[in-house]
Length: 222
Image (cartoon, rainbow, N blue to C red):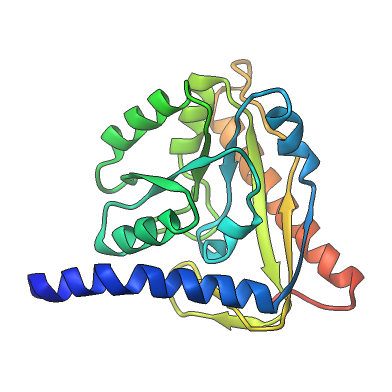
């Protein structure tokens, strides 16, 4: 795209996307389970690392009710659109990923860990493999001592795109469930790889918990 087309897209798409997200969420019946897990840290003035899978990104910002967050978002053009959209919800971004600008973004995350903000990762992004946890969130947990809280979102109806992550676009008026899992703490006794596997397992278990909540309502996740 030419420069003026890029500027036009970056000016118009984020506010439109934010409006669509708000309207879609308002049309749905959503509930939050497990919020007591991050809330007990927030009540003590402490912050957490939140981790959820890339395909669940669209409505996740409206399931977060914490003190404020910084989100690690790809340094690509698509990432810029997402970052600008998140600003309409009062959430800022740190730009970078495992494939582009990752070291600088990680250093920024380490600095932010000393501030009063939660840190947010999609640990299988930006290119996958889908639902396989990469090393960045592991190293951040190791170096900061912050707990990692798994987060998930499921919907009873919607469209799955043909992208690597099978990105979820919930259908209006569907039922949705946000789920927070128990905190996962890094242990030096187990080392990074065992922690990575344990955290990945905890995220998948939290996903199943959200899906089970839909099943309680006689519904299944798309």
